Amino acid sequence: MTTIFKNIKELIQVREENISKVSGKEMNILPTIKNAFLVIEKDRIINFGSMDDMPEISSATFVDCTGKMVFPSWCDSHTHIVYAGNREQEFVDRINGLTYEEIANRGGGILNSAKKLQETSEEEIYQQSAKRLKEIISLGTGAVEIKSGYGLTVEAELKMLQVIKKLKENFTIPIKATFLGAHAFPKEYKTNEEAYIDLIINEMLPKVASENLAEFIDVFCESGYFTVKQAERIIHAGKKYGLQPKIHVNQFTSIGGLEAGVRNNALSVDHLEIMTLHDITVLKNSNTMPVALPSCSYFLSIPYTPARKIIDTELPLALATDYNPGSTPSGNMNFVVATACIKMKMTPEESINAATINGAYAMNLSKEVGSITKGKKANFFITKEIPSYGFLPYSFGTNVIETVYVNGQKM
Ligand code: NIG
Ligand code: FE
Image 1 (cartoon, rainbow, N blue to C red):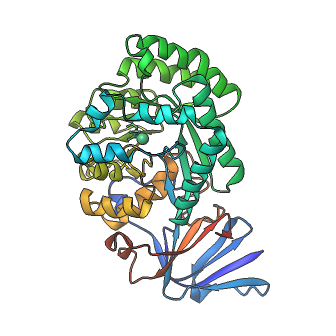
Image 2 (cartoon, rainbow, N blue to C red):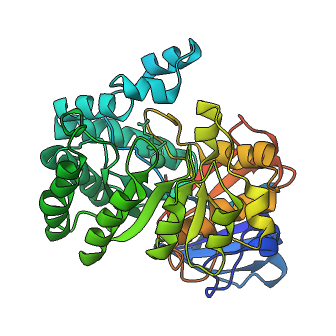
Image 3 (spheres, rainbow, N blue to C red):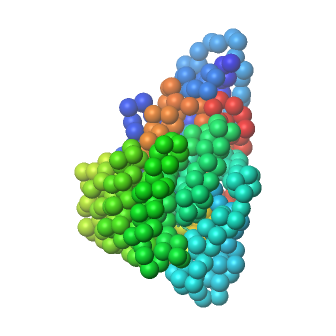
């Protein structure tokens, strides 16, 4: 049951167990051990250190990692991987000049995915979503958050959350579920928005809570979607059921959603492409993790989250994919880490911290994953032979991952 990984060229992100996130200048420090060993037993990391100090264990399986590096798995704290079908026609429409907003206004966007999801069986949605989950695990993701929000009816929102529950049962990586009934207003509620909010609060939430289907509550707080006032009403209702907020804010406009998130002790505020100085100030002295989604900026050609301003203000920052059919049809955390370096001027150290320990924090999972720490889950990946850890974001578009371990098992 004991496996020893030896001759590791560099063991990345080695942390004491009291570290739950890193902020500001600390983000530029990535603790590693060169020429290292790592010992796992069953599903846990039990020891690691320099090869010079490797203990004698006779009844162990050895894995030689000469020339290769070991990273803790990526922690993807923001995804929508449960969905039905795809939206490549909208992709072409945008190439031909329509904006994301224009597509949404004519019934495309989230409502297009909701229609597809409502018409698709739970089993079929499960199959499509499980395939995406397997794909992201093979790309190094070892913990993930998944949102509802493409149902937009009581029945379809519960169907999505049931799919997430089944993924939790059938996969060994930690999965956190977020209820995002407030993703968009269904067409029939466009002139009576309060009625849809009543439906979320009075019909959806009690069922989500009584069946224990979500840990977090999310709202798409944005011009044309949910106002700050509406978002706060939903967040307050969610909190009564013990759901902590993790919310979509500042994707296209800064309307006060970020401040509302912080005011309500959100675990994270996500997107942040459009940030005022005030938004950054509000994050100071809070426990809320800002989360950037650079593949969404890439795919929609919208601004990137101002990572330098955030980190240089001594704040933390996490990176996630936002994997979804409309704004980010990709769940590749390696691309996210590379894009953060290339487009957001984050250093490899900052990007790797943001995609591991800070991502774990943004899911309330930093006791379990996010670093190479004794007692944490043995979720990590072994690279191919690479010259340095910075080679991973540098060689964007190349998969440098050779082997993935989840719960101490080779995938
Ligand atoms: O995070 N911004 C809101 N929701 C998703 C995209 C939704 C969609 O286009 O399907 C996001 O980008
Ligand atoms: Fe999202």
